[in-house]
Structures are given as structure tokens and as C-alpha cells.
Length: 105
Image (tube, rainbow, N blue to C red; front, side, top):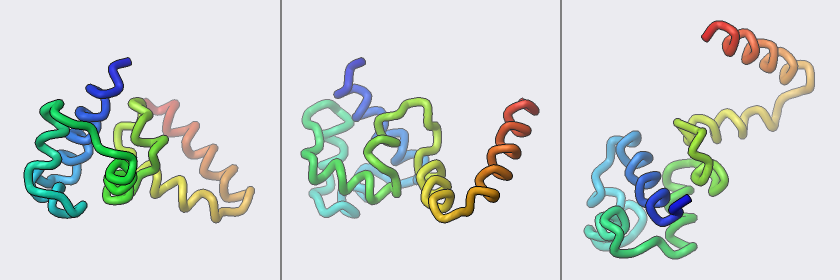
């Protein structure tokens, strides 16, 4: 896997899903207006601090960022956080529902 390309494309995907411009995203995470453009054009990669800021901005975990099978990582992470607080019986009910939804596809 070309991780540099993946990072650039994933940031673009998340940005477009959030309906935010490169300029606005750069500003929101505290950088010059061209910061995100430089990343998406392959001129630079975010440092760890900025990568974590991007994950926090989009409401996702670093592991969700790097999992290409998760199409909407922000929703996935929000659901995951809520699941952590449920009782076992509730989790079993949700699992049955998920299996039913999967079968319906």
C-alpha cells in the first residue's frame, strides 16, 4: 500500500464528506491557508501532532483513519463510543439487528 497516497486521499475524502474546503480545514486546525493543499498535492505529510488534530477534527480514531473499509469513519467512531456504554443484552439486540440488516442487502 502506498501510505502517502492513502493519507492524501483519505484527508480529501474526509474533507469532502464534511463539505469543507482545504482553506477552511487548514484554518480550523491552526495552519496557513495552503497547509492542506500542500498535503493533498503531495508536497508534505502531516506531522503526528497535525495528524492527530485532523483525526480529532473529523471525530475519528487513528485506526479508523487507516481502515479503508470504513466508508464513514466519523459515524463508525460515534457508534463505537455509544456501544461502549451499553449492557450486554443491548449489545446482543444490536448484533441481531445488524445481522438482519446484513441479510437484507
